[in-house]
Amino acid sequence: MNQENPFSLRRILLSPRITDKSYNITKKNNQVSFKVAYWANKKQIKQSIEYLFNVKISNIQTLNIKGKCHKFGRKKIKGYTKKWKKAYATLKKGYKINFIETE
Image (cartoon, rainbow, N blue to C red; front, side):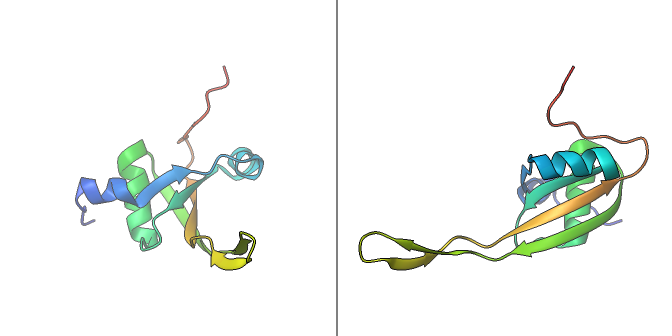
């Protein structure tokens, strides 16, 4: 596998998605969810997670989230939130990423 520059691999993962839904998915399917760079593809996301967390990934699923329309101010000026990408990574058996330690 062709390794990319570690600096660019760090720029792909923006933040973990820690919600009730992501917590339930982690317990049920051994998946973790991340907010990732919009330009990243599945191969780059997989390499980034494996490099930063020292785990093995079996599957990646990505979703493109569209920006929502909002109206601002007294004149109701229309604006949009940013579009972004979410990635669900399925970990292989024996690997675990724990963002919140509960012990």
